[in-house]
Length: 123
Image (spheres, rainbow, N blue to C red):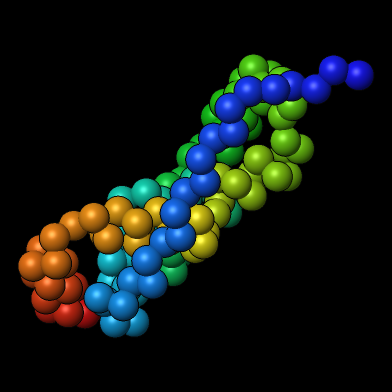
């Protein structure tokens, strides 16, 4: 049996710990980002207390688009898994938080301090 060969993609470096922000500042920035990149939910299941972190889509339209996307995938997820993916808050994911910490780790320290001050003022 033949095996695929080729270059192995490099692994991402470990994400910085993010000690430049305190817990409140992290809560504020993730709340802002959850608003900018909301979860996608059927309109019939929208939770009133999360209206600012959810994007409601008509149930029939969501089902139609999901079917179209799944039809174009070689190994589509189950409808339940696809729905769970869309409903997930992006920044509840450890991988997204690592990506955020990696990105902020490239920002000059003076700019991170300024952003930290803004996040504190918003809390």
